[in-house]
Image 1 (tube, rainbow, N blue to C red):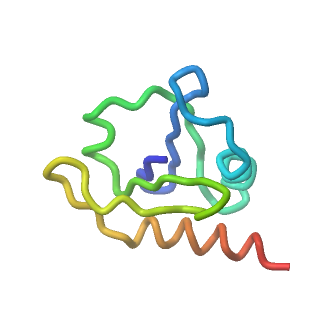
Image 2 (cartoon, helix red, strand yellow):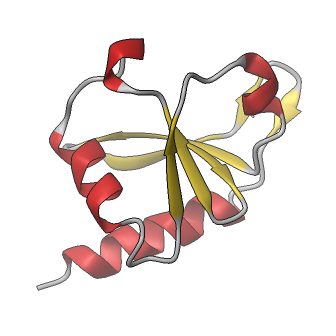
Length: 91
């Protein structure tokens, strides 16, 4: 996922991401967490203008990407998304 402000961007399934449980959960819950979701093909320019980049899977949850090429990402936006995810998973 790319995080741009309060927007999460993920590629559509036709573009190659795994149709995973965690991806689906995040897409289903994002609005409740205050995020808008866009499914669109990601171009390198979009990655470079993002606040954060996170990868997800059901075993590790969300994984913050620290750097892409020469762009370093602050962890604050990723941590906010991780906090929302963790809170929603509490029983």
